[in-house]
Image (cartoon, rainbow, N blue to C red; front, side, top):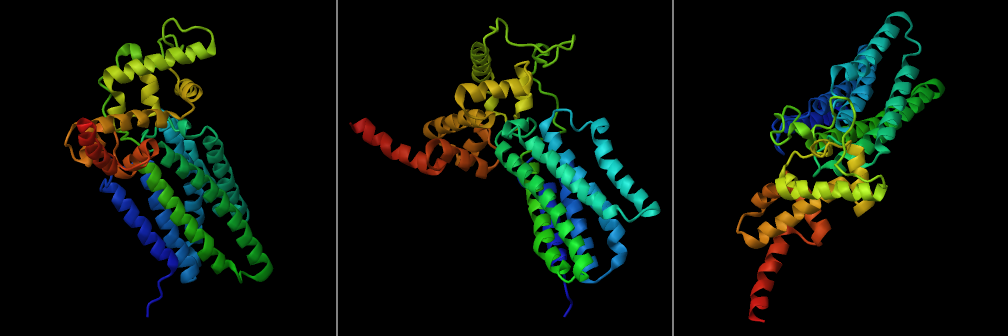
Length: 365
């Protein structure tokens, strides 16, 4: 019977996950960086299977090169959700090119420190992702607001997995030195494969909450709505008082007017960056105003409006629940059900049914 190492099974699962994203199971186009990340995890899993399943040591240089690419790629992917312009090549190429080039040079001239270098890369980029996560869900200003929390959890999970992978590599090195690698295969099977699966799932979750980066320019954004003025200074609502609470009130009033007039919350791809640009404010300033005034995140603020719209449609129309979901601004049923339950304590279907039963009784009374 042919022996199929567990890493090959993991690679197959990751490939299926990538195909699901390419086919657009949840709508939109896949985020290129997250898709590349899942494929890189899959290739790495195959290399691990060849090395530890069939003892093909010739793949080790490729393992090291790919590992030096995976950690910065994970950072670049999540950083692209944290800044509007983080995908510019000038910002990304040093992260994506320099580490693999450095490892390739070490292979040619001084291979001894390659292991510690890769461990350092994983620790550094895991720490960088952890630092990025300190801003909370509102720090991912490029993530769709109905999936911001999922992207944030994926970010935290990826940061922990990168650090965990680095620590596991350190344990493997110690095992190779002390016992000749007696426990290394078990450690590879128990953690590295689990880590690759977790990382792949996290990348897929973050991808599904990332808006289409190739979307056309926003037709409703007027020139005066640009977040940066020609002189490089940020604008603010006219007549903004100096007092912080009054400033927050003015921002929330402008946001409320914008939501009421343009119904922005019904836009499926709405994210914090786009919302802030409509108000000519820095994204962080807008999230601070909402946090301080309402005590909730921007995604909860917008999703509360979406749930209210869904309630209106469920009560006043005969539209199917899936159509109500889309009309209210949600893209996925899971997010819609979760947010609807968070606000109302029940599912959309149950809420409509309860509303329909309570209406005749109210009219009779």
